Image 1: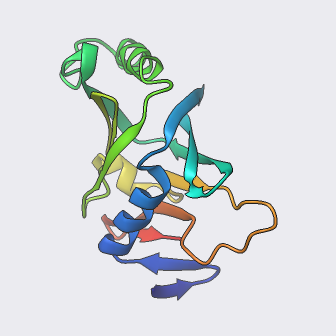
Image 2: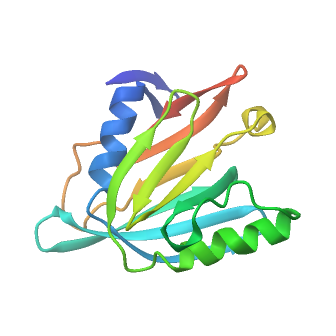
Length: 167
C-alpha cells in the first residue's frame, strides 16, 4: 500500500488516484463552505456502500479555478483575489446537485474534479508547497457499523519542494 509515516500511510500516485476515483466518481456535489482561505466541498456518494449515502468532503487552501460549463475558462479571469474567488464560487454553486464523472490527479498535486460539464481544478503554486499542513484533502466518512478496508482519505502534503500523498 505505501510507507507508514506516523499514523499516516504514504500512497503512490496510482493508489491515490484510484482512491479518489472510488470516493468521488458517481458522487453528487451537495454544498460548499468558505472560511478565510479554505474552501470545503461536500459530495454525497450513494454508490460506495449499497443502500447507504456517505459524505465525501474535499477541503483545500490552494488556488482553484473553474473550467467549462457556463463559465467557459475562468482561470484567466481579471481582478484581485476576491473578484476571482467570487467567480470561482459562483461556478461551484452552479454545480450543486451534479454528478462527478471524472477525477484526474497529477504528480505535482494538481487535482481536477469533473462535475457535470464543468471542471473544478485545484492547482498548487510554489507557496502551497511551502505549507506545513495539507494543501487539499478528500475524505469519505466511514459508514456506521461497517469496517472500511479501503483507503477512505487522500491528502496532498508538501514534501521538499514537491508533494506526497498520504492516507
